[in-house]
Image (cartoon, rainbow, N blue to C red):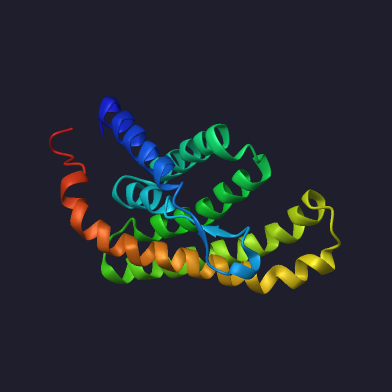
Length: 177
């Protein structure tokens, strides 16, 4: 892909992901600090069409912008980035060879990686960040696991729908490049 087109794609998708990140709501009202937003779908889409690297760049830019313009919470935004990366990288790498089976397998592995990875990361980060004992984090683990499993399952289903419709428009034609 030519550099100008690559920069334009990254810029457009990062900006869209940043705007979409403002659409957020808790999946479980009991733990309303865990909020779903559909922004990772855009990073996943470009990761599937171009490469996991492009997806991660989009993910990083949207998180940096969100940190600067809204959250100011470096730990929360870093956790958001980690969750997105844990999902997008395995999903896009497995899908790289294309095919429906590999797409579904990519989603499943990505969901498992993000859900398990975020459970572990929360056990490490939350006691220091919130200054609570690990036993309190264990009480939250079912919610954290459920949240991430639901979040990335929703992202997967939406990506299936969107990817089919836009891949023909966005996929690079290597003969022209």
